[in-house]
Length: 485
Image 1 (tube, rainbow, N blue to C red):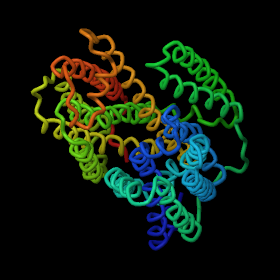
Image 2: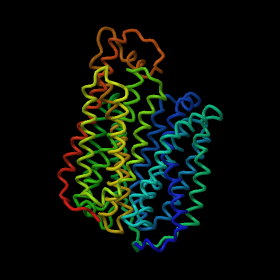
Image 3: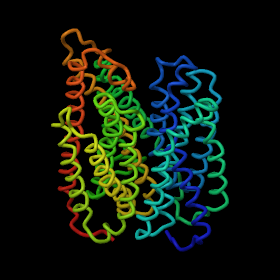
Image 4: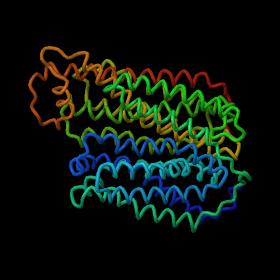
């Protein structure tokens, strides 16, 4: 790929498009969570409320590797344009939804678009910037993601209060049109594409079955354990069939050749597990602070914000660190520090200071900002040019799966540990009231309920620590002992 063929002006135009696209797809998650209560009450959709998020996540996860493959054969521009268009149409339909089922279908359409947009923003950056420049450009692009985490809930709250929940979706329509126009005008491709497109239909089917059964199984973990168990068996069988098929197929959806490099495989596994760790503190720090310290939702949310800010700042140092140190040294050091900070949570008493949560969140932000950005840059650099699209989509898929799967697992741990401790007339719904109340509600038996919640949160973070131990060991085993240039 010749990086110099694209002029500075065009690079600027493409970067703005990529920046807006990143913001648009990532703000989608934060902005919708704010509007969920009003959507559920207006469309009478409590029974289906989890599907408003799940439909989007499912179709994003299934389509991500397919688009990675298509981008390597049909070109980034066409596939990216298609993704942005479908995402924009999905946003418009979501805003126009007259019923909850219509909204779930529209969200699934949005996800089909997001599956192309999310990985291709990274692939386009890899195409138009050299390895040395990439770290800084990715850090710059991370600011769009960070911005969405900060302003998403604010925009969502404002739109719901002053207009209606429909505008939470409509706001993406003009953004989508701007991105499509910028890419159409400013992005001329000059990468060598494969001549023929062979669609790996069987690979797509096995992958879809394994992802759908995995995500549905995880959702059913704490309510329908038998259903969850059988769905996870389906996942294992479908994954095995998918891997066996990919080995023998001429032009596979996810090429096993990429994984011949152990260092590449380690980047993918690290990004997947760290995304699972990330969702742990994003969900449970606010719960911990609101239910046990009775702080307001805004104050509790600031803990997550402090981590996002450190993530942004830290990602600007990735380029310098990669140029100076072996990736393994960077990863092992930072994951080790994160592990120590989370260990303190397992033994935290009710007197554990609130400021300590901010410190742990900041350490987490620095560690993630550097390691996950490094995973992205290296996974693109360690594969041949014709596989950059696929490699990026595998990494993106890993990141979304890590978050989705672990969100379900942590929820199941929390509920299970709470149920195991119920005694003395304390019911699950009363514990639930303490966790979900706004801190103002006065609940009887706090002295009995608080320790139950604290123990359950301890066990959630035992899960987080276990994952950090696994990812630390995996990085220690990285055979690469050289600085990657």
